[in-house]
Length: 347
Ligand code: SF4
Image (cartoon, rainbow, N blue to C red; front, side, top):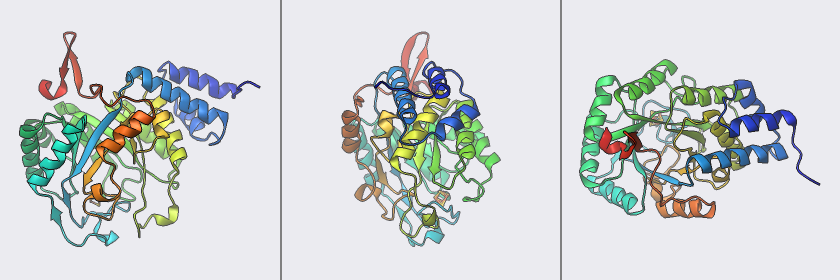
């Protein structure tokens, strides 16, 4: 007996495999496929094949360093660092020595970037200092993950050595966070305007989110030209106010990763998933985030000692799923006059 899938799905997947523009309705139809159907596995195979071809087999590791822990007064519902989560009652700023140690560990492990994360009220000046410190010590491209910024601050990030900025319009923005959707999108525009690479993820996905809201964010990432934009599921830390919603499974996450990969078409240079999981690595994702320092998903100050994946675990997961983390990153290479140059040097 051969494989047989619905003609409507087959036609959408054919379009997706050729980097055609999926409509919102088509993306929604794919997200609604029965999880254990041949159609879902065909969707995942199509996204996987597209990524393996366009990313040329490269497995990316973008190494997260959370530089501080603080009970954050901005109180996002999904964040373990929020004051109201009650997990962290004291602030911790990791020392420069510790940050440098993690950065060198990342470099030695062949990380493709360092994602430097701060909590929402962290000093911007201090982030710039950390950027300058790392720029002088390691050659790994730097990506900032911080609060909303204006154009002047975007220029300052560039001058401090950052080549990219991670910034997401989160699911439930304005509902589960105190931030305005417009302001988050404005920051994405600022990032683009000043010449920083914009990194994104559709996050943090939970079972309570309407598929229309998820699809909206996929199309926003495409419209603003994200360097990468996969999907991260919400992790319910102990006592999370969102615990009663449950969490999406890794298989549900992989289905979303596959849909977002087809929506993004020819736009991205990589496709992320978080936390690291091998199912998404056979459904269109090729980018993992090993983690050290603070994490909004953890109840320990240094997630590297708890939930966080190490760089070698991430590399092993890439190897197990047929991706090569030893190849050069596709995210930080620009082409000028036909020559390949590092975005870090071109910025
Ligand atoms: S997600 Fe960021 S801004 Fe929101 S509570 Fe956590 S650290 Fe603060």
